[in-house]
Length: 84
Image (cartoon, rainbow, N blue to C red; front, side, top):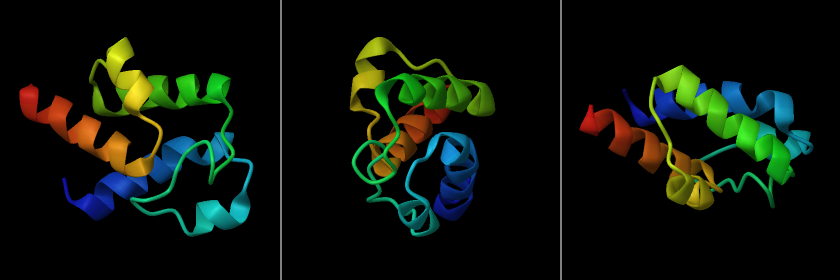
């Protein structure tokens, strides 16, 4: 999966939870889920569950704490997919 495909999938996953439309339109690797998109911590858990479902991976609690940006999510997804 290319970087662009992965970002597109993540964008679709986070869209229902965002609070900042402008930041969402400019979503890229450096976008922070909490500070830029204004996703609250409860919804961030929903994002993580949706990522697990979309990519058929399991994200451990330790990994969840690190998944606060698009780049971190991409790294985690790629790492989990490579391990399967």
